[in-house]
Every structure is written in C-alpha cells, then in structure tokens.
Image (cartoon, rainbow, N blue to C red; front, side, top):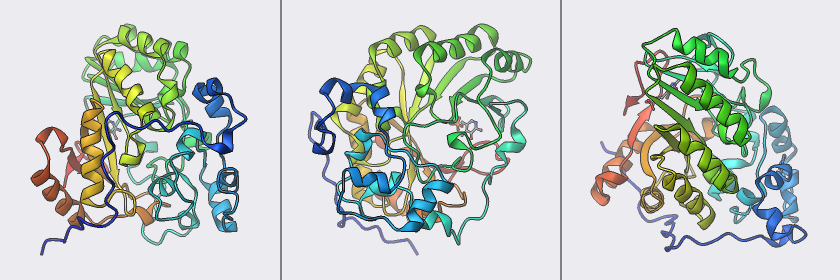
Length: 358
Ligand SMILES: *Cc1c(COP(=O)(O)O)cnc(C)c1O
C-alpha cells in the first residue's frame, strides 16, 4: 500500500561545515579570479547548448536531438553552475537539472504548455493574478540558468507573449485593488535586473501600492549565480522591508561555500529566506538526498518552505515522480528531521485557491 522508500542508493553525504568552495575549474584557467567572481562575466560566459558543454567535457558528444532541444527550450548554464557537474550523464543530478535533453521534445506524459492558464490570468503585461490576495509580478523573462523542469519553460528566455512589468503601471493596478496584500516578484529571475532597476521596481510598488503588506522575491540566483549577491544589492534590499525571499535549491550538491555566503548576506540584511524545491525523478527523489538538502539549507539559514510536485508542463514528463512516492518520502523525512526542516509537499492546480497539500 505504501510506496517503499529507497534509503540506501545515491546517498549524498552532507557537506561539512563550512561548505566547500567550488573554485575555478581548469577549463576556465584563462579567466582571472576577479573575473570568475564577477557576476556579469559569469553571465557573458554561459554555456548555451549541450555542444558548448564540451568546453568542460571535451570527450563528450551530445546527440543531435539534445541540440534541437536547446533550440526549442532555451538553455544557459553559468560557468559556476556548470562546475557543479561531475560527469555529463543522466545520473548526474546537476547535469539533469540544467542540460537540454532529447526527452524534452518527446514528452508522452504532459501535453500542455501552460497548464495553469497563466496567460489567461494576465490582466496587464507582467502581472499574473490567480489568488485574491496575491499577485505575481514578472520582473524579467531572463534567468541565469534555465531549469529543465521550469513551469514557464515555454515563455522564459524572452520567447513568450507576456513581457516584464512596467513598475508604475503595475503599482497603480495593484493600488486600485485593495484586497491585494502581497506582490511576489518573480520571472524569469528578478535578481538579474541591475540593482538600480530592481530598486526602482520595488520602490514603485512600495510607494505606489500602500495596500501591499509584503513584497516577496522568488529567485534561483543563490544557487545559479551566487556572485550576484553583492553588498550593493543587499544594502538596497534592506531599505525595502518587510521583504521576504524564496530561493530554489534542489540538490545538496548546490550547497557550496559561494551559495552559503550569498544566503548569509541576504539573511544578514534581515530577509527571511525560504526554499522552494521541486521533487524531480533522478535528481532528488530519495530520502537521503532530501535529508541532506534540507539539513544543509537550515545550516545556511534557509527554511524549507515548499516541496513542489513537478508541474505538468510539456517537456518535463521525464521528471515526473508519483505523488505516492512523494508522500512516502515525506513520512520518512518526518521521522528523521526537525519540523523546521520539513517543507509542505504541495502541487499547483488550475484555478486553485492556493497550492494544494498532497
Ligand atoms: C504560487 C503562487 C503564488 C504564491 O503562493 P504561496 O502559496 O503564497 O507561496 C502567487 N501567485 C501565483 C500565480 C502563484 O503561482
């Protein structure tokens, strides 16, 4: 009746404290240490197709279909994030998370590009409203690293119809609807905006929409491009409290010294940090991996908030994990871990009142 939980295979040892620094791999020997630490250098040198990954794995040859997948669904991997890949193969969790694969083109399980009808809940560019008291504000359609399991994989990367929000128009629209109490700035990744532009967006919402109790930022930057979290960014963000932030770490291999430092800076700026992980087959669908992830996050002062069932978006079927398995994993984790380390296991639903606990 209950799914059996695999607790022995793929044990990913918890990383020691302090988290190990990744360093600059040999493939990037020409880059100076200062360039490696520069987030704009990291962005400019992203790997944009499976073939470009041969820069760090010269003996590997991707299939033509993998290349086609990267044309259909945008791929970009920062040199930093690519350095987390240990081997260019399906069994490597980081490879699975970021490298375009033929499976994305042949999804027999999921058929819809926009299963939650976000396009229909978009009253003006860059605003998605599916709940009464919350709106999602799209800051940009760009990400540092494009997740292969992305719920917006058909729109991110600039190919979609929905653009980024205009700060003043978004604020005026929210102010005209006093029942809205929270703006969730998302995307794309809002921390890819320059510090000044992000300051103007948050400032416009703060000044123009006094009905907002909270502003929340959703970002994968501490995992994908931790160099972006610099002092100037944190100094700006702390002027806009109450500001909350939800991060997106999926695997303990992402918990490096660089990521820990980014989280430390954000937490020191007074921002409560949560994590939204996605349950992904072949990445983190076993108890040892999730335990190491949630324990590591708490050490980085990040509270596990949600564990999402993967959204039924065309091109992500190979990540599907049955909900029975997810429930069995949650039971096992509750046995092993403090309540602080236990996220809510939820799925999104079309026209739901909120996320639905599984
Ligand atoms: C998930 C989501 C939110 C935030 O939901 P919480 O349960 O408050 O984290 C807001 N707007 C949209 C459109 C969402 O999909």
